Image (cartoon, rainbow, N blue to C red; front, side, top):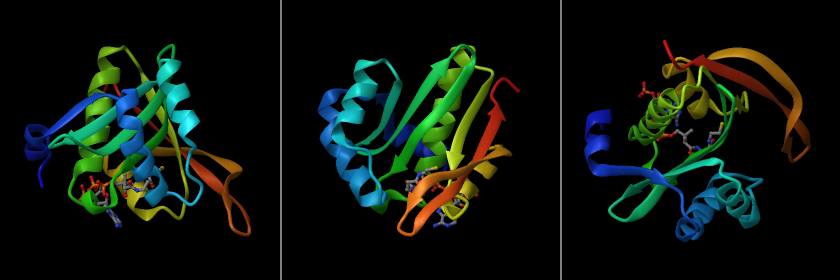
Length: 156
Ligand SMILES: CC(C)(COP(=O)(O)OP(=O)(O)OC[C@H]1O[C@@H](n2cnc3c(N)ncnc32)[C@H](O)[C@@H]1OP(=O)(O)O)[C@@H](O)C(=O)NCCC(=O)NCCS
């Protein structure tokens, strides 16, 4: 599905507390180490940039970021399993880029597991570059996995 079709069909909007149940069910189907409910409420209460992608009144994805001065850090980005590989992840990310550009952000950072092929492909396609490595950042069943740090200038 093209980004244009996604923009016509979906609503990129602020995450509200009424969205948290839907968000949590996506979080739990997506990660082995999901965020607990409290973190989502805390992010909303503490004015993190919390956004959802809504299709026909259903939340199909979300992104949570923090902004400090002219830097944005994406902390969580997720698309509901049955809506993946349809372009929604790319659309959600492009909407975030458009929004933070208007907030005068200069650069956006995120961490990604080297084993997460779909996410890495999404970010590389969106113009991110590897800028570093955080050792032992993510938990895995037999220890920890490093995180790639990716970044992109958003004002280009
Ligand atoms: C990563 C994620 C957000 C991608 O969302 P999505 O809606 O499937 O992504 P899109 O359909 O927009 O695809 C974006 C790119 O990713 C690539 N991609 C999508 N699914 C893929 C897969 N299973 N394997 C490899 N690449 C894949 C495609 O190549 C696509 O590139 P294209 O635009 O050239 O076709 C989604 O897989 C997800 O929610 N994963 C679980 C949570 C997660 O890992 N979040 C990221 C944490 S860093």
